Image (cartoon, rainbow, N blue to C red; front, side):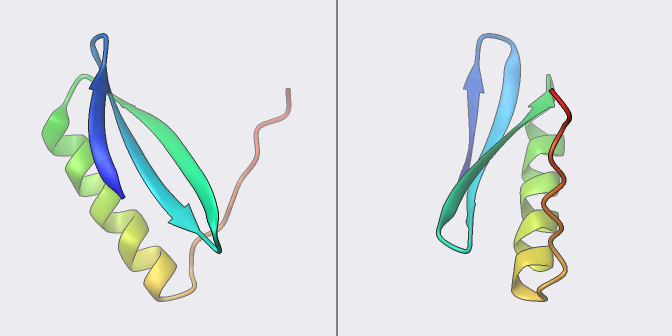
Length: 55
């Protein structure tokens, strides 16, 4: 699980049920850290909902 920057966008990287998930957050590292912490809590409490986009 972590936070990383690519170009001008910060991303979060984490695992749910053995599957790797990555999300783009935006230009703020602090916001990325907060969102990652929120995801960790959701996963720990079994409240994480994997919403897939229609492509």
